[in-house]
Image (cartoon, rainbow, N blue to C red):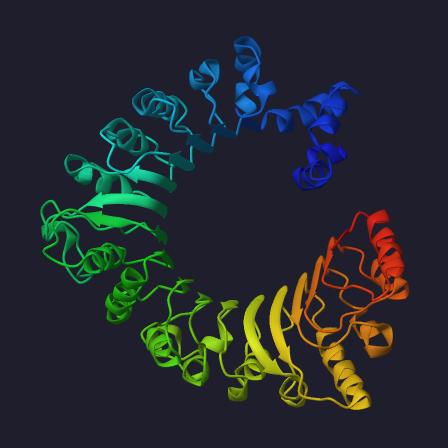
Length: 502
């Protein structure tokens, strides 16, 4: 018996990806086969902020509840949706409350909603707006609800305060999670020994202590430890991190510069106790080349590094090129790293050319300055998997003919990055056909192009070339013609293809 295309999930998902809600509603009235295929997509996600979902009557909701996979409460809470029971496919619940809504009632009802639909619930996000110092409510019902969801592995808490009498319950809840994100969350100072920061300790003999062995991804964004501090706040947070022996990804952000400095100083020696850590995101850390290299020197793996306020210089590059220890078979970081967002403060260090010619698994590279001469005279690029590239090129050639010749070599190299989807270039060079635009003809997946600063004047011919040769193009930024009339013509060429141009 031949399968109908609608019976193949991959085919149906691709079709639905091209449709909006109105299109799906039309499809379900075509035939019985269409109705059976498309009805679940109409009910897959409920956003209570949308008036039409609040208006759906309870009987209709009950009839289709087995299709519901995601529920979003955004400043609006419909009673009949809060009372849903038996949603066998519900896997994600998100709630955002404003300051006018009563915390106790909402959190209690959301907790009951979670328990009543805990079959497949995997993700939960709770975002409570509150005034600091006025939070008197307790969240024990919510923590217990999470514990009663056997498949819930991802939790995001925003604008939350945990009370001292809840700390054990909170830690017990965290111990079953794989992904935890705490944003503007206040945690009371816990007793020394409450967390097993020493990864060699025997968990079974540490009465009343917690370790988070399932936790793989941890995000701490402006998370504070409140109360009397026998040890520093940074030390407490690092102890929390060390209690996650299998942690793969760590993200930390704090807008207070002193707190960020203290945290980085405390974290650096502790990285050795996190053997599985491979993603480090510290976007506001202001580390010089030596200090950032010290971080890398303590790690055994590195697939992702975001440190946009730090200096990724020659010492960091040396750590990338150095063979690692036996835990990863002596593999170099440059053979592992896939995602690197860190600037190079001194282009004379020639860091960027080495990255392009050494990191073969890079899919994202966001960095800063390099001279075009260094870029084109270095070794061949091996980063053929790049999907996003952002860099700034220093204009070091002033003769027109030589500049065009070198630019064409640069574009020829860029044109080999056939998986590139986003290209951000800051440079004094132009992007015209006579300057080598045609060398980028193989960038068939390019969706976003940004050329910043300098003389980036294009004409209608270049605009036509782009729309004809880059079928996925969605947005173009920073390319203007000197002639205002030509600007209108270019905008029309892009706009007729639905391409944003500014």
